[in-house]
Length: 90
Image 1 (cartoon, helix red, strand yellow):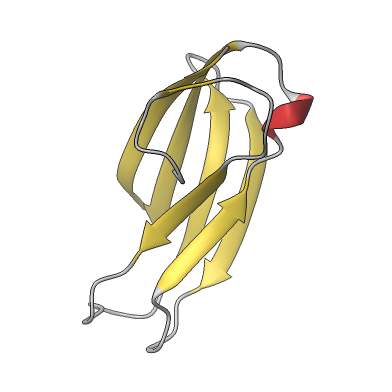
Image 2 (tube, one colour; image 1 turned 45 degrees about the vertical axis):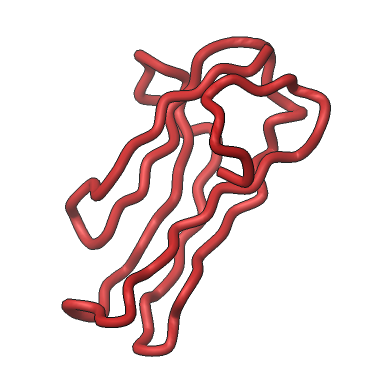
């Protein structure tokens, strides 16, 4: 996220970023997506085909359309979830 916190006031657009290491294992389809915590419904998704020169993959969250609550941001490469981040909008 563009802020290292996990609690955000919901008054500005947030940006989620996946920063890649210099060397990639293989070229895959990558995704950043958000769900309400505990729910499987995807609120927003951004897909990107990984290339050899991809350094950063970002998604501007549509959080101004979401209400206060707890959410989870996922970073997926191929079929595997690489990382998840729980955050709260106030």
